[in-house]
Length: 140
Image (cartoon, rainbow, N blue to C red; front, top):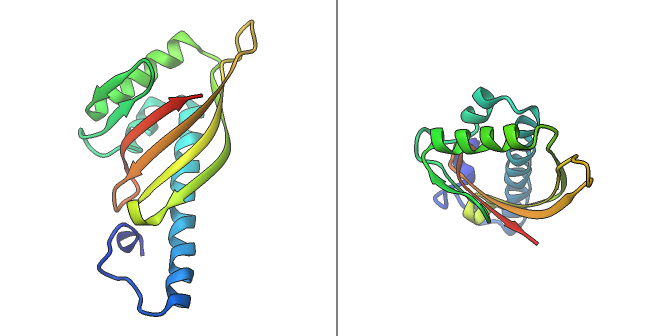
């Protein structure tokens, strides 16, 4: 089932069946995004590395632009060191089956002296195995 999510080759001819399939695939994308944020909040770099495709991942936000899984993990590790109490609260995930991606509305809680909270949208592109190919974060 997982391999079919990001492929157009197994589209159904029945509109009703297609909607059912899309719902199921959307749930898989939703779970992949939620699992990623749970791992991110654990700050476990080894588990975080396992969320990304081998050595081809891309991370881009308003301060960082890196390519390669080891650099993506290192960049996150630097965030965890700089802001040790940082945590993400997922507000809403918008899965898109046709692009095998999810747009995620999140709150990045810095948990610092100022109690700062950043409103962010992460756009996550997944491969057919739900490994992250690219993550683009937009602050707003």
